[in-house]
Length: 132
Image (cartoon, rainbow, N blue to C red):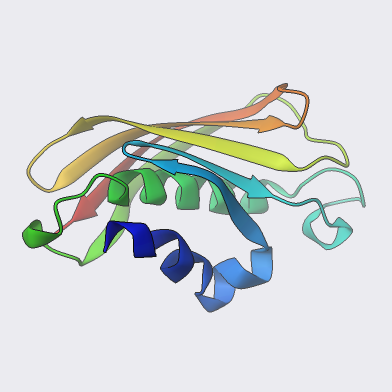
């Protein structure tokens, strides 16, 4: 089931419309790429903050699923997410790297960093994700 997660996630209507793809999917560590499109920007070159948040949320959720014990449940949702925007990705793909830092009975705690293709940080985030 774990290996089916990337295809399942990207097959949902909203995420398939965004155009996300997985660059890597390893236990507790995921990188998702958002391929640049002008339609995802504020001005033709800089991503809308909501688009960045959606990509980061997806990367965090994928990190939670990437090492999940499926016998413990399959219903899930983001409980909380905090993002600090620190830069802009100008006419560049966005890379969201998520790492699970702790797993509890139902909750996973994830750190997420979004960068442009050159590695310049665009945003940092922390996420709490629940699977029951």
